[in-house]
Image (cartoon, rainbow, N blue to C red; front, side, top):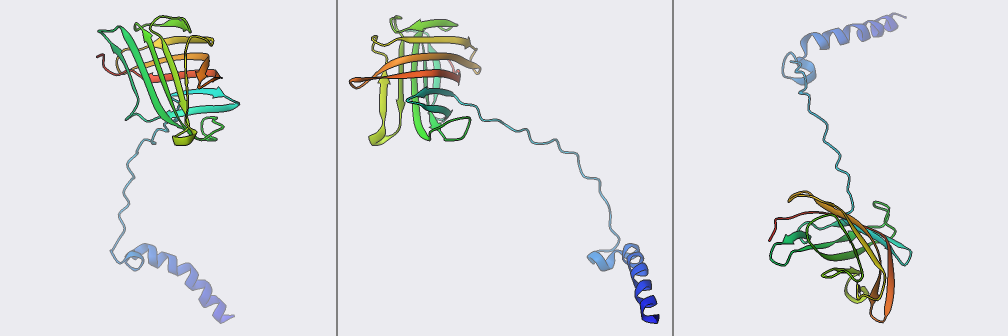
Amino acid sequence: MKLLKYIFGAFIAAPLFFVGTGSLLTGCGPETIVDPIDTPPTPVVKDTAGFGFTVSFKDYQVLIDKSQTICYYDKVSDITTINGIGYSTKDKLGATITSKAEILIEFPGKSIANFDQNSANFKLEIATGENATRIESKNDGTGAVDLKVTKYGEVGQKVEGTFTATLKSGINQRSFTKGHFSIERNADQ
């Protein structure tokens, strides 16, 4: 019983001793408490697809490679060129396939507009896959194309739109649905 009293007393006195001196805990003397600096939380940047489409029941949602993607207005030819290059990664942004993808869109002017397979100075080309599995598809005027430029921002802002298209791929045609693009506009050339 006497031993129990000593143990009980040690448990009560020990915290007071350690808190009072601080030197046995850290070896540095009394602790100085400094209020932490309030740092704002790091904003979460959600990935967004630079472009995407569905073809052959595969949903591509492509994160663009900004070092290879361009979007500019050519003052001499009066043509806007969008050349997006990137990767679709399965289960990211709703994609159902992992693959490299590229898109080339050219159209006259620099404003909101609609284009179809017969529009003058209009081009839509899409490539999927790499090396031996690369499939290139182009508007040759025989398949239906509906491309809408829904936003045409200033330099540094986005050029956005939607499309559906039946494009020529070798001797076959491929249907692209749920197409969309959102690419930052570079300086005019």
